[in-house]
Amino acid sequence: MECLDWSFKIFTMAEKMKAGILFIMAAVPVFVQAQQESSFEFNFNHVAISVIDVNRSADFYHNILDLKEITNRSEIPGIRWFNLREGQELHLISIVKEKVEVNKAVHLAVATPHFDSFVKKLEANKILFSDWPGKPNTVNIRADGIKQIFFQDPDGYWIEVNSEAEN
Image (cartoon, rainbow, N blue to C red; front, side, top):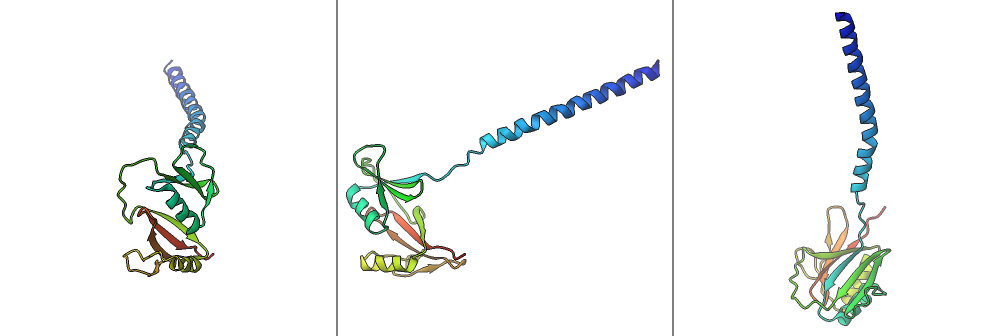
């Protein structure tokens, strides 16, 4: 009888293990799916900045950075939208009147394959630029060889322009 009890216990343990393995096999896809659903896969959409004079700022971003104005889908007066790249936008908002404090660490950064031509455009438009430490009319060269400059828009926001990496 003792042998029968022992074999019953082994059979029961084997069934429990089998059930446990089946449970794990069923749970893993649900767990993985739950992990995938919590990975939101964000894409950059837009940056919005508060400006004093939306038309002055719009002229600057259109004429200096050559950004194309797009439809302000909010249809709120005092706001203008610009295309940075496919699905990526810059929104200029003049309807908020609180003072904004800016510093160089908070900046918009863009890259261009026409870096040297862009620097010449800034010089022709008498727009001051500097390297990161602030030395006027100086191009910074990062450790990876990328050239970069910093300058400010009419509201004091900092803009960083980088050369594009060569492939």
